[in-house]
Amino acid sequence: MTTTSPTTPSASDAPAPHLAGNFAPVAEELTAYDLPVTGTVPPELSGWFLRNGPNPRDAVTPHWFFGDGMVHGLRLEGGRAVSYRNRWVRTSTFTDGVPPRDAQGRRNLSAGVANTHVVRHAGRTLALVESSFPYEIDCRPGHELETLGVHDFGGRLTTAMTAHPKTCPTTGELHFFGYGGSKPPYLTYHRADADGELVISRPIDVTAHTMMHDFHLTERHVIFMDLPMVFDAHRRPGMPYRWDPEYGARLGVLRRDDPHGEARWLPIDPCYVFHALNAHDDGDQRIVLHVSRYPDFTGRQPSCLWRWTIDLASGTVAEEQLDDQYCEFPRVDDRLVGQRARFGHATVAEAPGTGHIPGALLRYDLETGAVVRHDFGPGRTPGEAAFAPADDRPGGPGWLLTYVYDATTDTSDLVVLDAEDISADPVATVHLPQRVPYGFHGNWLPDPAR
Image 1 (cartoon, rainbow, N blue to C red):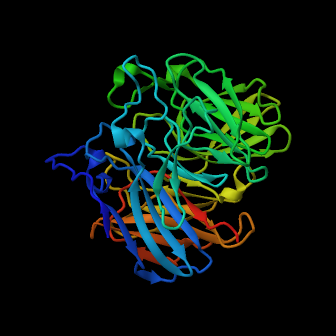
Image 2 (image 1 turned 120 degrees about the vertical axis):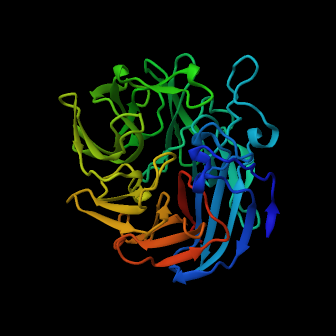
């Protein structure tokens, strides 16, 4: 059933790479029920698989990162693929054309595209983009994926919110930050308690506005990445940042038990990191971080898995490349965020302008260094995979869920893999009623325990 068809994309003889192939947006919002499945959907899976990404309504945008947010959701329950739906996030920019800055150049944090991630905390499902406030979407039965409105933590949030907040599995707290602006403070650290109340907001001293997409959380520390992608307003309307290795690169360590204390900065080699895999404390003086690291931001070299080991006693960081395979969108079992996790996984897929890259998922054993690969076959490309647990043991068995695009048929599937045996054939393949364009991040949101 078609519920909405706002605008049909205009044709172009030579679309930009981020508007071509499966980067191109879809024009319709669909709802479909009782989807066909090859294999068997694990009956333990009861909930939503949601993934966000850019889907410009008018099929025109100067950069892949700037398209209107669209959430694609698949409902699994009782061994069935119950329904699929995709919905634009109705931000004020989408519905009313509200710009992110007013005539005087002041930021409107309620305006934005909410196109990067979708997370759940304290009973709220939030669509996120790092340049503005979150928008809450509705996952209740009968109201699936409708936009409820902007969420600013009861007026307490006064900065933008990162698209990569982290929930502490021990305390239930949500840790996040906001960055940007034309004057200090360029970075602000925030913490919300398990009930969703914003309880800490404090500036972090950095020397410039740099593009800070992700960060790290451990049981005792928060670690920021101040990397040499420096704001440059003259580069608009594209990405308003430039690669400046002379700026340097450093990690800022803040103790969680002293959230208003001073961040300690440690230098590293210039690089760029969009996404952190995980981090953990290793004794009293060491912190271990795993990242998908680019040597620069020129687009000429891919990202690979690296390990950074912070030695607080010496004030140094050991940097080690762990693999030479391209990887992005690294994830762990979310119940082990900030704790020692043996396994992580990452995606191998093309980005706009890179050309075709054989799509795969990688499973890393962070203790032994072993890597297991699942190749999806010719023309089949996965997105980010979310971990869905099979039981209540963090780091235990479960499944990886990802949307996979098939270029030969111009269709998409949801593929379910056994996380402990990802090289095996899929456990289930759910065939979707339309393709899902390449996008960014999402989550498996299990139904609350009854």
